[in-house]
Image (cartoon, rainbow over all chains, first blue to last red; front, side):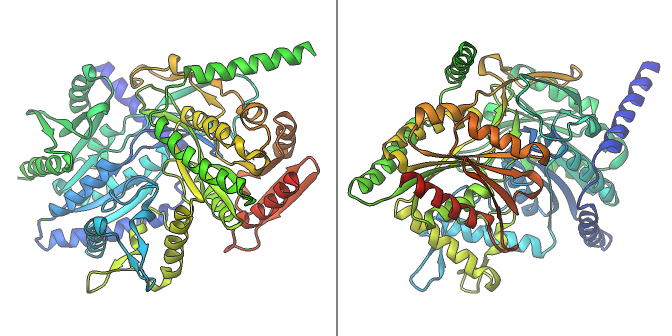
Length: 316
Length: 316
């Protein structure tokens, strides 16, 4: 098995070199303090016999800077709707959630509000009091109530990222600090993570000038962190990753591969054209198609329901 | 002057080939109808002797898709704060504004609200009525009031884009439909427009696979549309473009070049590190530094004040 050992070593060295060359987190101390407070609170509950479960939901796309003083970057498509919706259903199912999200992406409890014209949801009455038009009143009030409840009860910790460098550094912090939850921890990795990046030290310092004709770029592969998460950062946690493809012909094959290669417990396979209507949940035991019931329903409701059951079996 | 003529012809053919190869606008008919209504309303006011002025403010960054079914794209940094703030000050100065903005970027009248945690601005009281905490009450109420006033009086038309293809197609529509305002029209082009793109027909159909090692990409230059805007689309309008650089040593030189090459009336030069505190307004007559008065002030207030004067002289 020399060749396999050889490839693992080269993978490990890719991971090390990624972290070594990444620019340091700007607000690392604050994230670390918030994380510690959240983990302490929840682990006290676990120790006192409360069978709590904690999930880290990652959401939105990561960016890859092309310049150190960043004007241009490569981005992965993701509104963050799935992560935001899933967070709400996890909290409803009794989980505490670390919501690791891309700055500016969809937020739990305001998926219906956060639009470019959200001021349209509010108006002033004659006494200069804020009102919500009747048509939106229930949605807006429920959002405000549920959000404040989740935050006050310590069930929701939000941490934001933008670049691939921030995302992977924070994921590592979250994963290692969640190891105290053992099998009660879950990772629900639906962020759209960049596959390619430009190593920080080989990046242009200033804005790339456009006068010089076409631009040629070489991007390196981002080392696959799923293996490291499973093996080192959080070996006991229940791990769910997502596979998005535009080509249905290769989707399930790639999902199967991810399940084995990274030893995920579940891979959720989705196709860009239909990801809001249908996903396929792939486990070692088989494949289950999850479809949303109607246009007003969230696919995530059934998906989280299924995953909560899988997690329960895993703990049991 | 053969060589100059030769280069102009090649530029024109680049522009034609860009538009020919761009994917058609998905909501072109709706944009066109809204635009016609807005222009008709304002041109009736102009004909009736009201000395109105109309500005197209472009805002936010454009994206360049790397795949036809778009998962990955290159993006230009821009929060859209400047465009949103400037729109408010233009309306205050009596302008009607077409706000051409990147989906998800900052919006006029809710620059202070639109954050990832904007639900923190609202709470429910005991009668389940929506309340705003005292600390934010004035800001939120003013935002709601001013926004609704601008929309109801027909002073604000918002049109959104995401890709470079959408942006340039819509800009062309707006510019040609604004030609009826003659010198009373203004273009305030502060969107961060991509310099490089992948022509639609040479783009990967499906998500680029990451298994094949490093990724090599060749990007073409986006043809410079400022010349076409000035010469063909809106030859009488007052045109202001923006130059952003990270390297202060080349900034003013590039701003001067843009002024001459694209025959702009004004170029606003700003450096990435200080763009919120200081800009330099470059005209054929000279350079004026605009600094904001304090941390609570908007630089845009003084900038728009200066530009409104320049526009007045231009009309006069």
